[in-house]
Image (tube, rainbow, N blue to C red; front, side, top):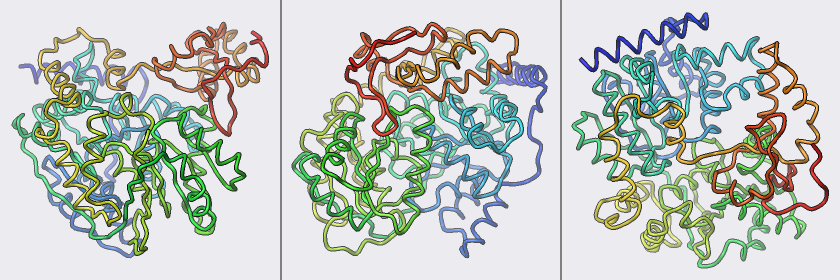
Length: 548
């Protein structure tokens, strides 16, 4: 009766919302994405590989797949989709945007939507549609054949907020792809696994695919009695020779600079502050062609930088350095010659390795991956200290050796076994998250709260004071506009592109530098230094008083 109730109520919500918005309930196209993948692969003078054939043959099954970077997991998932209604999820908005572009432009399948908190701004930026808002609303109303989205847009149904049946009923006849599950915190993975159990019960299908899969997640699916097929497809290509550096990354900048004169060099720091520090030191030393990308740029500037790093990667003749944080880890198609990175937990670290020698065989005698283990930033509050230390111990055996793809999978499997995790904070968080989900009552949690729980952190939007002052007329116009809803909505999107999302923890650190915006109370004005070169600096700027 519960399933029938959810289907009836959820589909009534779908009908009601679609008719109110004057939108189609479903895209009824007969075009099958699998046919487009056939053409895409043929145009590359290639044939479907083993993973892609496996996915095609098992399109009616739940799948759990481990595949190394560059093995064609995306094409495999779209073969598995086989023209059915599909939700394709990834951890980061940047990755989702890239996936949307790949399906729509590279593969050429137009029945695809984009759904995340800044999706409308991204669609407007692309200028591909006469009415970007209508395109976004189609995604929002779940009517696209394929929807690329973040999990906080789909998985809140697990918390059974008021109206959750709309999504849950839709998933009864849908397929859902979870890409790079290891990138999520243990509490969020607990939500995802519970969601997959619920989807399985109502009749939907899932494909969980990843480069490395923590063993406890696979065991949890089995424990829940979910039937799925498990396969592993790893490239025999030797891509990464690692060297553990028992020093800080900041101590090795001279060597990095020399390498960047002839090669493409990627530096990944664990925190924004460390990335900025490295950038400023290299700039002070007169380093040519260095670039910085992290999450503390306003949307407009960050979007330009994401485009630029891809152009840099694709330009065979361009040499230099890009300094980034973990925002490049998942599904950004870039390929560098050398990687210099702070140590992080193995699952995150191996994602970083995938940005170097992505599809090439490495034949050099010296390491192309340098991992710095001393005084690494972000330990404790970004990466679990115990897991990080266990990761270092597991890697020591492979110092100055080629790290095979099979070895990476085996190491992550061992690291995240119950035996290794016994007594760690990570395992405690996973178990407590799992247990908390077993007794959720309908309608006791709001959708807004559920989405925040899935984002794992409370975020607030801020605008740097110099950007605010340059755009003061825009804020005043937004405040004045009360009659034309479409124009006010357009002004809001323009304003949102000038903001930065920061964590609640960061907000309280800089609270004495934040001012309530009199024209837009949801966005704080940050009395901090900002430019499009380094982003927002969390240090006080006493140059002038804020003018409102």
